[in-house]
Length: 555
Image (cartoon, rainbow, N blue to C red):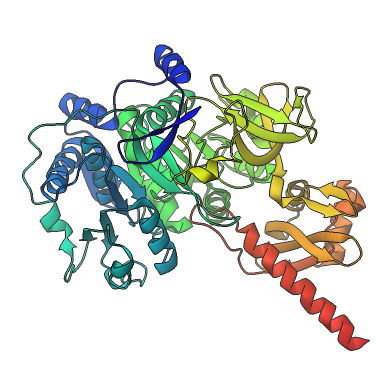
């Protein structure tokens, strides 16, 4: 693939050959979400698109609001390719901003609300964002004050628009959305970048991921088809709209499928259950913590989630035991693991029916054409056999257009254009993929590679364990050893002796056992729920240093 300059000024990866092939196959279509929204609003303007608490937003209301905001952007001198950042919770305004930007060919940069000065300055500076939308206050953070401290570092930032509250010296949402509706719609190139979303940064500096209208639209349609989402469905989406899963299910899929989405700005399991019950939601998904908490909170009321028919789980490691537990608790719902990333949204698409339920728990789902997956062994040769672990590389029409900083592309792709996911996995029964661990998570103990995920999955079957994450800890004897950070279920007791006895019964080789157990109240996470193993590795190093010092003092 070659690099070419996008209208935004970003340098994107591009192949004329693959673009032609994917257009001819119908994977890439000559349309953007703005075109779909116009058609759907004309077809059924009063159909509900989004639900927030007691408020139902119709297609017409959201589309007209987007037209007014698009006119505001134009009046402020915005041109195609300019970046609009939004640091908002799961509010309807986020969907309006995303649609208004796409109407004009602007680029959105969703930023998680939990980020503060350092992350915000970095992301706004990297994208050159000209507009920023923030809440007046959310979860005790006063965003306008935070942004005001950064204005001197952000010369490109023209306007800060404050949503739901006093704007002070900034622009109020009411003023930005008070314009007349945009009179004429410009032509927008679907090959252009429409979103920059930064990776979670679990292993270092966050990277800006460039997504095009083509790829995002294709992936939304494929998910709708694979999981049979239609107008009779209702989506409950707990993932943040500033994360790839939340963005596609709140911004795109309600327009494309006709299924309204229920938004929840502050997640609690109780609020989630109440929303699912009240609106009789049929489809949902999210990272492991969402599913764990829903299961625990509904223990005394299994009817609370009776309307659900599909729940996909991914974004972080998903233990087979968790999928088995929720499948037993809610037999009317199809639970399964799915695998993807900000760069490649869904490499696998879970399972299609209850007949494949065993694959939903024990694998990360089926790889469906046109998605292509290669597994490479340590010698660089491709692995075709089942059950043999290798590095996962992927390629297909949903592939992102490269990183914001082109230097980040250098090691991210092989010479054939396949993206290196950074994960290890193996095939099962040919078409199913099993994620066995992160390439960077490998523990090298006495020269032997140990994948933490296998041990984590085994420990998750213990009744005392609510969640566990295992990382490498320095060892003077073996080089590295496993350090397990565990959250216990309420009232439970667990120690390293109990862990060893349990792993003995599970039949794992003793060299795989963690040699240190640290009980914790919580695990550090990114907004999507993924565990920050880089921070846990730092904590493991600190523990090892303290133990080493303690031993030295005793001597």
